[in-house]
Image (cartoon, rainbow over the protein chains, first blue to last red):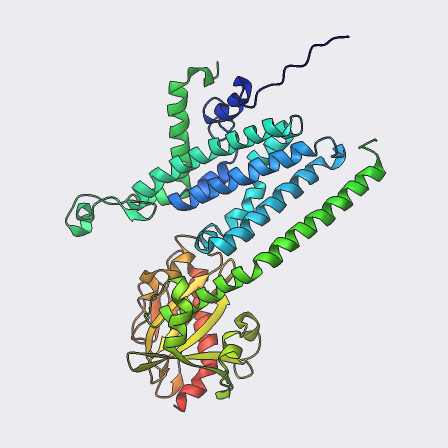
Length: 221
Length: 230
């Protein structure tokens, strides 16, 4: 009989830390996996909704991954997609209800987009690809990592769009009033940044910059 | 246990649905009062904003009680009730379904710095969902003092512009009736409005602008009779 006790993996082992750090760069859901683009286009006009959206997704994703992972051995295979959908939909409804009660203005701004978290492909993708096959702690780390990886890009895009499109950040004017042409200056906001196509272009530029730095992401032709 | 058998699949689905239903209805019941008070305070804010009183949401109730002196319920040009709560709680979405003279609609009477104003609530259809608003009138029940509009899901940058000052700033000074005959205020193609009875619409937001146009005509009309006699 073996007296060997299986070495328990520490909570923050290198492998576990990689679950969080990978989605920031090597495996970013938006720039590498190109998932969740729709919401990246829709709610990045201003910084504040982008931040709230990111936080909501972090919550839904982490909690959803843990729940799916906990019940992964109980889920009948044939209805697993439906189960995943029910879990994510319930969590999103909870977030929506809480925002309506405690952050009413933000909830009005996000309006339909909170509901659209349900259709965010990153979430269902991680449930299916990771949580169904891994334990709760790993799934939690994976959820946090992927949703933050998503949020970082969202916030970066929103930063450029609000700064260049409205001359403001988080609603505060940062471009001095005297710069504007209307006040005898030389500057005008670029209205194009307020439209979704510019979000796509900004995401494209971020992908370019990322691949220029991280050469292992470049596909061989 | 075979998690892939039919019996288990049905049981799992049933248990899941019941659990989720209990959880969600619990959350909904628990948060309802807070959500409703948010909505109520926001409505008060909008009512006050239409006469140029800007307050934070926390102070809305106090300011509302101070500025709004009377809330009447109007039907067919007559006051049918003076109860503040009844009128405030009128569901405009339901009210606009009946004809102009049949519907019971609220009229808010405000007093600001010794001057009285009438505030008319409105509700109509935009492109994607409902639009609503408040239009305030001077003591004569004819000249517009201010207006503000809200919407559920109009397109940002296009239809959603109805709630910006660019659109609402056109309203002060407009009139709703001429020599006692109700005219309403038309929302016309951008750049073509002239006179006291028209404002510019939003270019690119035509359907929303038309919705506001219809809403103004539809929701001001029930009061025309009442304003004639004041």
